[in-house]
Amino acid sequence: MRILKNTLVLVLALSLFSCNNDEEYIDISDNVVNDDGNTGGGFTDDDILAQTLNLPTTSYNYANINLPGHFLDNQLQNEDNTPNNNPITNPGATLGRVLFYDKKLSANNTVSCASCHSQEDGFSDSNILSIGFEGGLTGRNSMGLSNAKFYQNGRFFWDERAATLEDQVLMPIQDAVEMGLTLDELVSKVAAEDYYSILFTRAFGDDNITTQRISFALAQFIRSMVSYESKFDEGMAQTNNPNQNFPNFTASENLGRSLFFSNRTRCNDCHDTNAMVGDAPRNNGLDAILTDLGVGGVTGNNNDRGEFKTGSLRNIELTAPYMHDGRFATLGEVIDHYDTGVQNSADLDNRLRVNGGQVRRLNLNAAERQGLIDFLLTLTDNNFISDEKYSDPFIENE
View (cartoon, rainbow, N blue to C red):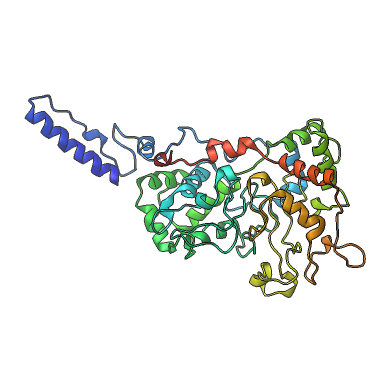
């Protein structure tokens, strides 16, 4: 371990200094690290971690967040994709946080998971396409990660090619554009850092570093990213009914809320829980002639052509640009699409049709259009995007 080498050098240096200056010899041999990772009488595990990481002595609470009542209903709990073999733990999510922000997980130590999923952007990327470790561009826009645990089929990426979050988190690391490592290289780079020996032991009981444990820890951290303290949540706590006027909303926000949950727009058909997450992949009429098959390109099923994962609307104000290709720069453009811009095709989702098979047009007036935008802005959670437990723990980046 690197701390052992540094300690021995320090012992030698102090010995020479004391002999040359007739000073009393200072014995710090007790600071040598033992086989169990702790020191005999000097350096503790927390001392070793503190050389690199800004972590609290007592772990942040990731495993038992005190969620409001409207997050505890059966419908939303059924959306939880946490597997039985990887529940969130405080030490597991702490390890995941460090991995998430560690640029050593890329081939040239220049990008991390957080490079494409920034906390201030709702854990999304403000670029249309994300920039990889050598400057290359990804094929699609990076999705926000707010409330990723609430998506019933548990699949990830726009085209849902990852069957689980545990599968997903390893894919960008191996991608030739994004991070550029093999799994063997990943394990070697993680094993080379002193702090990971301690963090893996705390999370899993020993310091054995494997790709499965890396994926489990990253998935725990991401699933812990629950956003529940927005203005919308305050209104839900007061009424417990999204179809009632919220006392804390403006008239425009309440207009947008009523439209969002109405049969006229049917917005909540696809964003169907109190967490404002998606229900399934949908073809939302972006193009009549497809240039990206989305889920259909993965499954080969013609019924899936042009379908893309329906993302969470949490912190949607912060996650621009929008859609899988980042084509819309503003929420206004998104509203315009659903108002008048949906393109008809055989693959269009039926929820965007009316009787007779015609495309649904919302025919919004200016006040209604603004109301929907104002309502979406109530989903911004300022506590979430500034919460230290989700922030970069590396001292060198502070």
